[in-house]
Length: 178
Image 1: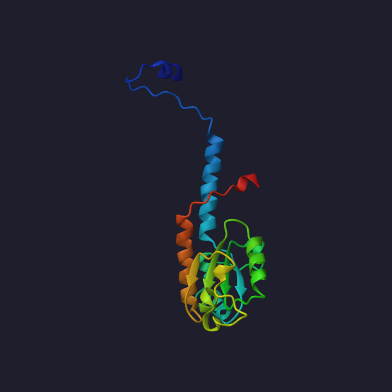
Image 2: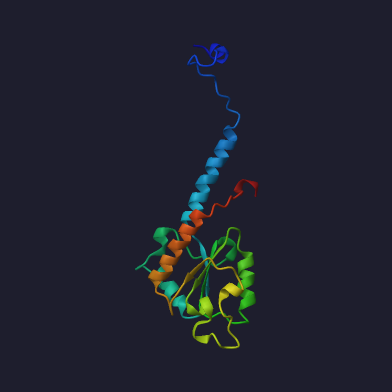
């Protein structure tokens, strides 16, 4: 049956009307967006904000035993190239504006992991006049990793929990408009 005959065929005769392909470009852009969001969700590039002994455990996660690179975690030195901030250690009042400045320089979407008792709530130094009682008073925190200091496995588990949270959160990224 020709395309003209199929278009003129009455409804219910089993003939298929031709489909117009006017949304092909939009379909390709949507699929590329889905692929890039999947890649972005699978590879986490944290900026390290190591303030005390928890930073040593963060370095252990980067070493050969735990090998963070195999699951797509690559430490970045610049906040403009990262999407996750790991706050590890005691946050003092003098360091709080620097933490906020680094957080503000990160591109959207941005995530924060608070690592250790001191970053979570002040820890051992909770009653000190110079310590912020939790980095969540300065930046919004997505994942809390408890411990003093937490092990590298605990931090790795926290990053995997962040992966799950990123998957649940459906954020549209307009990469083609930039």
